[in-house]
Image (cartoon, rainbow, N blue to C red; front, side, top):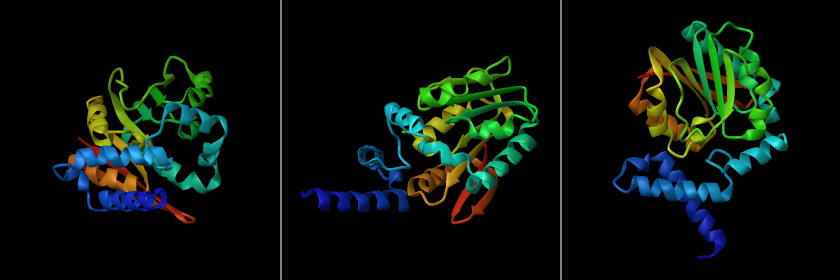
Length: 226
């Protein structure tokens, strides 16, 4: 098959896979792996990628825009949920990047804050915050096992970068306190992220959800209970 034709065929397969939730079909798991492998090979911006790619992107400053004005509204909604529902307790931020969320949240009271990201480059910038109640560490979110239990677990535009998002979310949910919750931020222009959110909503109870629109972009901030 010619490369251009193959590319367009796979784009259609990918679109169908997410639009019609083909992961639920008998061969859906195998198809999902093939779609994920193709996405990774093509470098899609909303798909899993290697640790080396994350390190390179943080070194080049590609994610600096996350701290700019046109992302601000989403962060304050996230922090509002975190502060209200977490009651200053214990927080776990999976895919914390170089700490844009924490930089806004740190002025509020908390007992413990753990931030995890696969990129050594991102985490290196945050190690200066490590103390008796704050810990940033480099680890792969697909396999990381948290220590202890948390009031709030946050996936701020990070869940859809995991290779097995729903099974991973179920695993992390075991680290919630009895009345704890998970907060997921989802970029609505990403087919993969919306598909992941649909699957998540089948497995978890939606406690609350807000849609944030700022400029031409919009996000869903979803609060989940076990």
